[in-house]
Image 1 (spheres, rainbow, N blue to C red):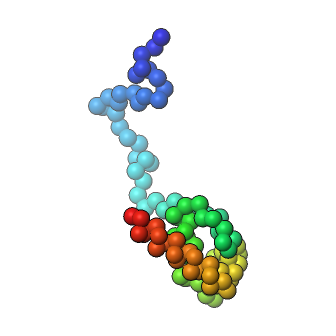
Image 2 (image 1 turned 30 degrees about the horizontal axis):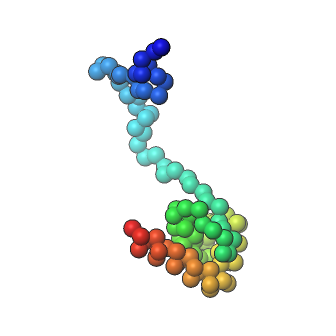
Image 3 (image 1 turned 90 degrees about the vertical axis):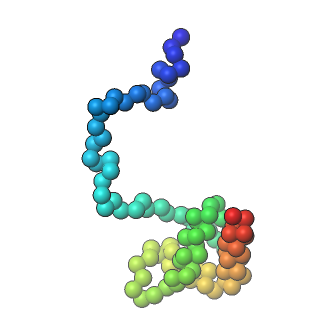
Length: 100
């Protein structure tokens, strides 16, 4: 029977003479791309970041210079016509803020 510290989930000790490769701390790295499935009207949201994404899309709206994906354009067009859904999304955001 091996020791607990030899288990693969335990980190191995690193010697004082070890070096960290430069690519681990690269400069000017782009932010990660996080995509969310846009919900249908009255559909349940799955996360706070998804809610933030939806509210962000509503805030920027559609403009001629928009570079949004077609699915996002369609979602904005649908939600802009649905005042109840806009109110619902904003109410959820207020509830989240109130909880924190």
